[in-house]
Length: 157
Image (cartoon, rainbow, N blue to C red; front, side):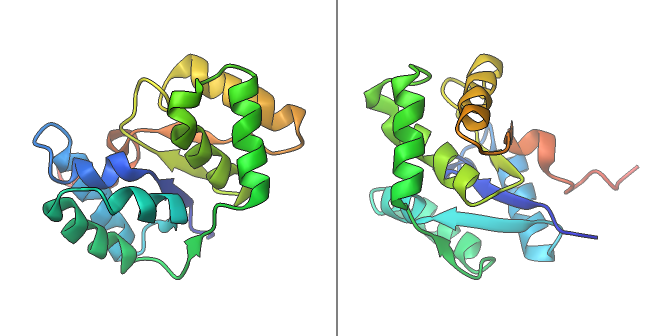
């Protein structure tokens, strides 16, 4: 069976250090470490982690050990993110959030996982991202929180 490719944004990594989100962020990290899912990270994630607190940088090293390569922020992904902005899904202040979705879409990711409920994991936004994706010839993308995706702890009775 084909492994599901999951792109995670920076919020998932930071979530490993946040009491509200750490159970599920650490759970999905364990899923990647066990090979349950295939992790995808990008140059944008690398750049955002540079300004993160040291404890988040240490967690990021664990995520990086689960991947084969970093997805580049290609001109195609930048153009798609700009289309999201042009369609007013997000404002220019949240260009990087649009770029995360675009990078994942262009890479053919199965789903995006994020804790960003305002700009990414939001019903209306997901519909709009997918409308633009279809309009421009890309497949729709699934977007969920780690809580909805992780299998860690679900096998206990």
